[in-house]
Length: 410
View 1 (cartoon, rainbow, N blue to C red):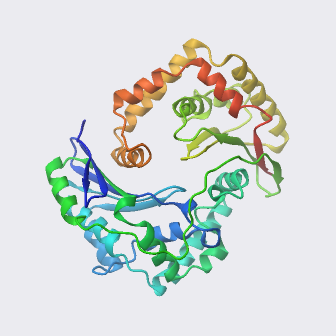
View 2: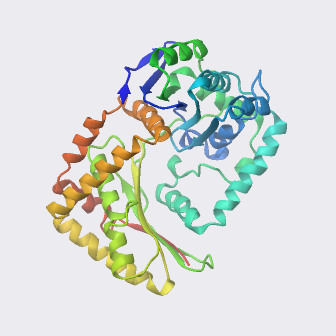
View 3: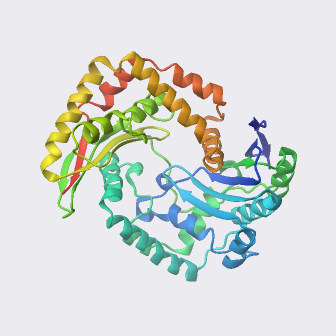
């Protein structure tokens, strides 16, 4: 795998190119704005803009926009998080110019109309309601809202029915003109087309520097200071209990971030040999699904543990977890096991390079947050340098009953 050096177009926009042996090109436009950059009164607006980006531009209708990509087998998609928005396209190398053309068109010329907005409001409200119908998904959002309230990180990415109903074309145009600008964006490419061609195409289609316009209703990020501690039970009349424990965790700029990734992975990562899966599912048969999750933001993070179990087994599960946490806080992880989990994480990281879409997005996010993208060897070295003392230090912070909040659906 060959990574080209970064370069800047239109004086402001970084472009990252990774050339691989593939018949497919993946290119994304990452905008450094997410739900935390909105206002409380217009929460959900950033996500709505993401939807509306596909509804037409000054030179293409909704159908023309999609057909230009999909008629040659390409795929166009997007997502909104709390700190960024990304539009990305996967397409055969032969048609990579189409992908760059469409991303440029969306970036410079999206048109917001009341007719399309009214239709999309119904779609997003249906999306919100579908999450409410799924307790296993809804509990994650509600937990994070309670943990971070009233800070902007507590705002739901989708918004709520009221804020969505109240959105106007002016609301969307306002923030689009403010945030979707050259100095706030990054282009990332992974694919089989040579770097000279990608450089030429991006320079051509993104030549114009798009500058920010005055915005009447934007929100300036505020630094996160502290999380809330709570213990709540909600009657959802579900078949089984859905339980979540969690607390704030290291930010993406914290020196213990990589160690936190490892701790999360060994506790409740995707593999069946994670410590909590072995404990609650394999050893005691108390749950079908237990997992842990760690998300790092620029100024804080969140670590959580989710499990589903019979209502009568909740306390038994918690007692077993707290006993495990106590041991980790006291002595960490034995040396041989720690080395095994390091190798596991390195192996998972190596496999992730084969997911070129995820790799493309990861490059853009890394540059957005660090102005640097680690090489494979740099990433491996960070994992190898994690010590048992790092694990104990983190466990003291995130695995102590006095710092763990809980939310239970029964």
